[in-house]
Every structure is written in C-alpha cells, then in structure tokens.
Image (cartoon, rainbow, N blue to C red; front, side):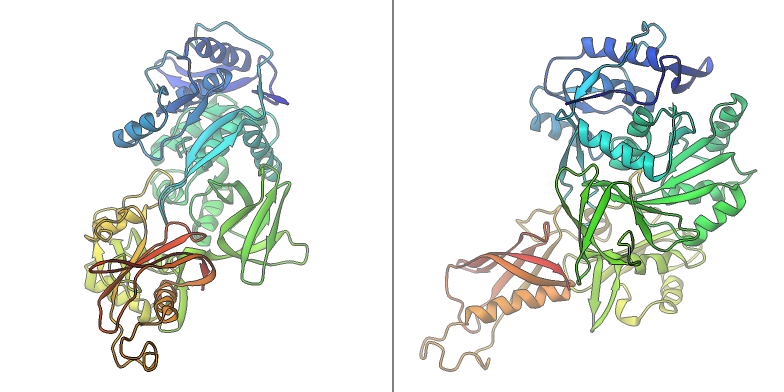
Length: 541
C-alpha cells in the first residue's frame, strides 16, 4: 500500500512559513511539493541519508525529498562530528543532508498532487536518549509514522488549518519529528520554521503570526523551555495551545502558564520506541489518557505492554504504570523501571528525588543518578548560583529521607541537557569523575564489586570435604543481592555457565552490565581468569 506525502491540504494552502530577509513568507503546498520533487531528483543515489539540518525548513524539505527518493533518513542522537563519522561508517554510501542544500523554494515549479510513498518504506532511523542506558537504534516505516501522526491529531483534535505549528525541539528526535514535521505533513496545519530559543523569540513569532492573521500558534516544547519562556519578562506571547513532552512537567508550572498566558497546556507520555502513547492536561489531571487507537495491558507489578495504532507489534514499556479507572483508558505513571531506588528498605524514584531538589528556592536545575563505582550510592548535581553545597544539602534534608541523601552533591554551572531537556547518564557520571570499570563499555550502566567468601561461611562444611568449593547457588545469590541494591529483581535466567571453581578466601570480581534489563549480562572473574558468566532477565524490585 501507499500513502500520500501530504494530507489535509489543497494546492494553494500554506504548508510552510519561513522568516528571512524578506520577512515572513508563506509557502503553499504545491510549491513545497515542487521543491521536494526537484531536490529528490538531485540527491545522491543510495539507501540512507544522514540528517544534519539545523533549520526546520531545510529539515522538512530535505527529509521529504529523501523519502521520495526511497531513502531512509538517519537521525543522529547528537550534532557531534564523532556521531556523524560513526554513522557514516555504519551506513557506507550514505550522504549528508545539511543546511547548505539548495531548497529552491522560490524557484520551484508547483507540483500537484503530492507523490505517494510505500507504507513499508524504511523512513527514519532514530536513537533513544541514553538517559538510562546506551542509546538504541530504532527504525520507523513511513506507514508507522503516518499512523502516529493520526494518533497525535485525533488525540488533540487537530483539524486542517486549525493551528500554526511551531516547536523548540529538534525534529531529529521523536517528539520533534512527531509534533512538528509529521503533524504538519499529515494534519493540514502549516509549520512555522522558526525555532524560538528565548522569550523574545517566542513573543516575536506569536506577534508575526497574529499580524499575518494566520491560524493561532500551537507550540511543541519541553517543560524546561516552557519554564524559561514563562520566566521571561514582558507581556505573555499570544500562544493558544502548548504541547510538552520529553520529561514530566510540574503541575504548578502548567497551572501558572494556563493562568498567565490563557493557553491550554497538554503533556504527552511517550517514547522513541512508541511515539505518543497518552496525554493529559497536567494543570487539572494527574492521570494520563490513552491516545487514539492505542491500548495497554498492565499487570499486577505495573509492567505494561502497549499495542495498536502506530505500533507494528506490541512494545513493553520501561515504566511502571497503574490503572486509574475501570475503562482501562486512564493510568498513572509510577516511575521508570530503572528509576526505582531502594535504600535501607525504603523506596522512591530518581525522578521524585530530582523534583524535590529542583523545588528548592535558589536551585535552577538538578538531577539525581546512581553511582557506577559504588553500587547503592546516589549522586546529585545541582545548579544553584546563590547557594553553596552545604545550604543545598540542608534544605534538601528537609524534603527527603536521610537514606536518599546524595554522596556526593556537587554544584555545577549547568547540566548537560540536550535540546529535549534530557540527560545522558554517562555525562552525569563524567561530571563527578566516575567512569565504568576498566575494560567495560563506559557508555553502559554497570555494577562492579569484589567478592570474598570467608572460609567460615556456613554453606561450606561438608561441601567437597578437604577441598571446599563455594557453592554456585551462593555465587548467584551475590549477583541477586547486587541487583537488589540497584532496585532490580531477577525474573528469569537465560544462561549460566560455571567455568572454574571459586574457593573460600579467593578474591572474585563481579561485573554486571545493566544496558538491557531483558539481557543483564554478568561475569565473575578470578585472578587466573573467568569463573562464572550468565545472562538474566530483570525487572524493577
């Protein structure tokens, strides 16, 4: 089957708005398609295109051109040259799309109707954020992207021409791709290429939209961007609809924006794997409501599987959820599986601890995260220009249980957030001087510790008399104990191999890689070599 590149447009309807030396210019749908078709004919032959455009108009035109040329568009996780080089090596023959491309928007001949693309076209290759583990590669077909756009439009009741879309998030990431590029292509709502960074930028964009008598502005942004915009001085911008994602938004911020700007704020719950799953109005609702065409199965432990709509197959979610109504449409987010923290028999989540830290007056930003060097220990970074670490710690002690106090808590000028507001775990660990164990993948969350089973351990008498050997079940118990300290429990065993015996008093190094909870790999090594290896399936404790 094939699906047209555009939906909801007539040939003369505005699809793209650009701002340049000539001021605000509207690009009609037929002119846009003409520019896309012309660029597609000039693109290098190949199967993959690396998307490096920073301008939204260049991204939109070049991405559509690559799709029309039958190419998959690879969305780098960062703009670093190292990522570019690694992806070009991974996809030999791939060409680069960047802002230097000649889009020919002014010279292109109108082209109508728009071309149709095969639903099974491999359209986009995206990467997860790496906030809890190594960024993972995910492939999206044209059909799944179109179905995701329908989920987005139906959930928020977005009708052709109802809004002028704009965003602050790079479309190289799933939220930006879904809420700006795909929403524009599939809802009949024009996309303004402006990507505001400061409050004055947003105010100017809103003013230009109003003066042009265009459809009201709908802004896709992150909670961090929205908070920055709201703090900016001057009259509130004329934004009529706001959709946020990438991290939870504080209810107070959503309420303040709705009160001061007279604009509705909606929040998306989703992921790179799934796209949008559910939404809520955080100023009023604690629970999320499932998006159009989607369904969830949630078990007694809070493990959830999403299916339907844009999903080609059921997807297990990384979060713990709980139903909030009998219709099985509204649910609460109880925390990420890898986000759960258990210390001294007490439980909380890293997200909850970070929220307590950021709510301290004088704190601009902050985050908790686990230590990779000392399992069970929590660390925190804080941006607090007017407070010293002692004062931050004192105020934090008024909000959280002493068991969860971070060691260390370090002041920094800023946190290494990406343009979605997300934090890579490895970057946080780097700032406090931690690295992964020698020989390991330093991008991956790990547990590393030394084990010594004393000769007086009660399991040893009678076990190989005269030449005692530590029982395998005791060694596996040590692995389970280390995982429990990290807030995880073993739910299955994929593979265990005992290579060499471990004797009482012998030093053994346990190394556990937590990159994938469905395949937690561990080894136990003696000075002479490997003793035990295995792979376990784990879940939040």
